[in-house]
Image 1 (cartoon, rainbow, N blue to C red):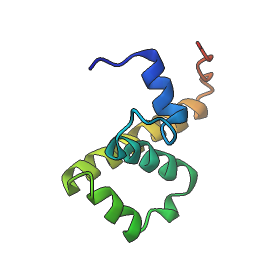
Image 2 (tube, rainbow, N blue to C red):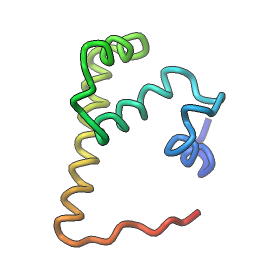
Image 3 (tube, rainbow, N blue to C red):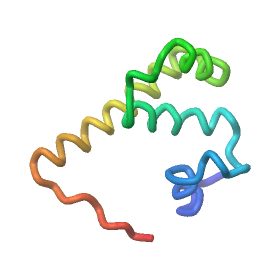
Image 4 (tube, rainbow, N blue to C red):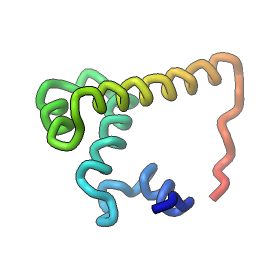
Length: 88
């Protein structure tokens, strides 16, 4: 299953209501959203839900990936790099 632009857009914006995403596929962007919006809400209950779909090593890898990319965005803003224009 290759990724299409529509699938990527749905994963960024509409994953909660898109029936084509499995629960596991929905938990990855939920994790990313929560890390960005309010990481203090990522508690034991949140991790227990993640563990229903991912192993602990997978959760650590996903968290590191999210943190790296969020940090890269912060760095790019700090040097005045412009955000990409919406190509849609």
